[in-house]
Structures are given as C-alpha cells and as structure tokens.
Length: 187
Image (cartoon, rainbow, N blue to C red; front, side, top):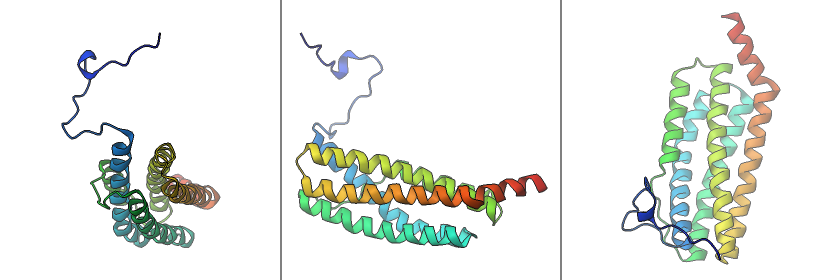
C-alpha cells in the first residue's frame, strides 16, 4: 500500500497556502515563467551599471554579452508565453531583487579595479546560478506538460546561461582573482 500524502492541516508548522495558490504543475510553470520574465527584464536595466563599474576589458565584454543575451531571453520568454497560451506578464522576483541589491552592495563596498571586478563576477555568478536553476526547472516542467516548443526554447536559454557562467569562471580564474588577491597583500 502506497503511503498517502499529508494535507496541509496535518503538518505542524506547514505554511498555509494563499487562496490563489498554484494547484497544478501548469500553474506552477506559469508562476515560474512570470518570475524569470521579471528577472530578465530587470537584468536588462541593471547590467549597464555593472558594465560601468567593471575595469577589466574582458569582464566588460562578458557583461555586455550578458546584456545582449538577457534582451534575447526576454524575447524568447515572450515566445514561450505565446506558444503555451499564457499571458506574458512579469511578476516581481524576490530572489533576483535580492541578488541585485547584493550586487549594488558589493560595488559600494569595493574600490574600482580588480577587487570590484572579482565582486561583480561573484554576484553575476549568483545570478547565473539562479537562472540556471530556474530555466532547468521550467524546462523540466514544460517537457512534463507536453509543451515541446516551450521546452526547446527554455533549453536554448539554459544552455546559454551555463556557457556564460563558465565564461565568467574563466575570467575570474585566469587573472582577476589572483590580481585581487595580490591587491589584498599589498594593503
């Protein structure tokens, strides 16, 4: 006999769901799409600030590429909304808002140069990892829901996010982190 799932009232400390809470995977998929749509739109507005604060030409180039990608991801998400019949609507993403606030804090707490560049890379990689997790989940949901075109589009974005993350790691490891460490030793 299979164990039955507990309902919310049976679990002490369980969070009570809102009246409009997702009841099925499609609704959860929709919530996730609207969340990442907001996040990508915010990135198109905040990445230029990171570009202005980066000093390494290689990092500046990577951030500009990420900006172009984020703009493409917004368009691609609009295609996902279209193919699934879900209204393209951005819902505030608390995670991305927090990551952007942290990024601003890192820039405020570092001097322009290698140390700030290392901080920008660190905060950008947190953003990338959030996006990788989100796009991976949405891709899996789309496949499960039989939304094959949406799954294909989400897989493209997931692949791009992973490549950008790897590029940022390469920039950090090849020079910036060691230069930032050397700056720490001098002071």
